[in-house]
Amino acid sequence: MTENTSSTPLIDSATEPFMFPKLTAEQIERIAAHGVLRSITRGEVLIESGHYDVPFFIVKAGEIEVIRPSALDNLRIAIVRKDQFTGDISMILGRPALMRLRVSVSGEVVELTRNQMHALIQADAELSEVLMTAFISRRIELVTRGIGDVLLIGSAQSTATFRIKVFLTRNGHPFKYLNIDRDADVQDLLARFGVDSGELPVLICRGGAVLKNPTHQEIAECLGFNERIDHAQQRDVAIVGAGPAGLASAVYAASEGLDALVIESSSPGGQAGSSSKIENYLGFPTGISGGELAERAYAQAQKFGASVMIAKGAVGLTCEPECHGVRLSDGATISARTVIIATGARYRKPPLANLAEFEGAGVYYNATFMEEAQLGDGDEVIVVGGANSAGQAAVFLARAGRRVHVLVRSDSLSVSMSQYLIRRIEETPTIQVRTRTEIAALEGNGHLERVLWRDSTGAVTSHNVRHVFLMTGAEASTTWLNGHITLDSKGFIKTGPDLTPDDLAAAQWPLDRSPYLLETSRPGVFAVGDVRCGNVKRVASAVGEGSIAISFVHRVLAEQAAVSPGSPSRLMSQNRG
Ligand SMILES: Cc1cc2nc3c(=O)[nH]c(=O)nc-3n(C[C@H](O)[C@H](O)[C@H](O)COP(=O)(O)OP(=O)(O)OC[C@H]3O[C@@H](n4cnc5c(N)ncnc54)[C@H](O)[C@@H]3O)c2cc1C
Image (tube, rainbow, N blue to C red; front, side, top):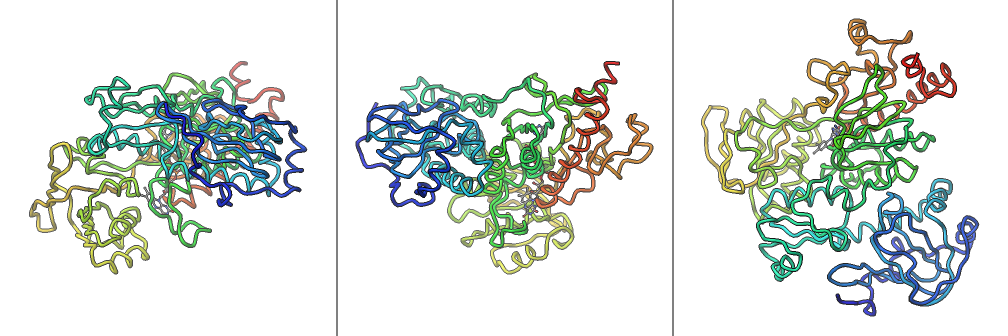
């Protein structure tokens, strides 16, 4: 192993005011009131990578070096100097430390435990801004440079490699990627880890564990994403889905003192996380990428103390008869006093026989920088769909003069797309809208090579297009509810005033009061965002509903406490009786 720790650090902490700000004497004094003052000695390891619940330090004198240890080399990342502080977003997310921190010049530090630092961030708005900005900036830098505890080796042509890249990126986890088709020395590395090239993609995780074509759950386990989450604890609210609606519920619940757990089957951000730029969300006049919005919301929820379980899907509600448990894909059940369903919607897949063969290898359901990186210079693309997501994708992909065919089944875009996007499309000469046109077949060998489309005259023509972006409407993610909750005819969840007396009678609604706004046919179970019948499929409305639901959660908790003080729920006590 190369010990490259005497070299110049990769990041010069003296010139990076966002990543390594200097605290004022008054700020240090405020923080010191919560921790202890202690001396540090050259060579002392203050934090070891892979450890959980690591402390937080402010350097008063001396220096601390930040090292990324790995099976291949030890990289010197930065030096934390006088008045600067250690830490990274992992501390907020409850994940293991990515870096080793070692004293390079003896001196003195203020030390806080993770819990003390967390409490400080929640209580002190000014310090929260300085610390959170630094933690997020540091993480962005590591992700951009691919410096972390994960090495991914695979082929750029492989669907599985693409899937893993998207999962790590959406979870904000830095990784280094080696392309088997291009990078030198990959074969030596594979031999070193005992991997056959037929077993790719492979993930070398946290310096040693070799995961061959891992599932998301295996990656989450290896990286310790869920390690600190207590499955046995009964929660005030279990929130299923970490899209904008679920994350908004988590932020409001946790910031109002509720014990909230979010259960997410994939990565935080939901559909919004896959948007290249959201331009109509209040407060972002120049737009914000869905990935950035998701990352910020995810950190914000955890800052207030919500727990977020990654890569664990909910597979059912346990209703005996009231629904106070969420069954997970790994067989565990989370017990909660109230439940918020925020499982959103996912793209409908057109009935094309060999669609699955090309998913991630020419067929995509999102259009972000991740997907764009799969495209070659000058590649033509097809976008299928007539809603805003298709319009955004077309405009995004047409940057740099790329030719984009937009295929829509209807007669025009105006039926389902915002005017500002239609105007942008009309003003972009390289975008061609083909109305009353649909894909008839996909052809290729391992990667999409040709698309056959049927136009308004019924004629089928073949086109050498290697990339298709499918944005063809969404269906609610409600099959996992197994009939426990009343749905509308299209599978979306009915709530509040949408529930008719017949619906309530069929569901055996047990209370004297009617369901609250956003409450489903089961007391204490709410539905918010795109999964709800009548939703308007917008980030702002999903966020709004997610936050409003928390005020009704408070009411239900108060009802439960009033009827049965000392017991979490009147309904549970009724069952016992
Ligand atoms: C490409 C694209 C661009 C868009 N652009 C805009 C825009 O510019 N402006 C705008 O306002 N809106 C836009 N939208 C719409 C917006 O993103 C959605 O309305 C919004 O994301 C809905 O949020 P949600 O939280 O209700 O659901 P979702 O975002 O769908 O999130 C649901 C989450 O639940 C998870 N989940 C599903 N089932 C389970 C389960 N069983 N267990 C655990 N977790 C589960 C999913 O993995 C997902 O993370 C866009 C959508 C797309 C796809």
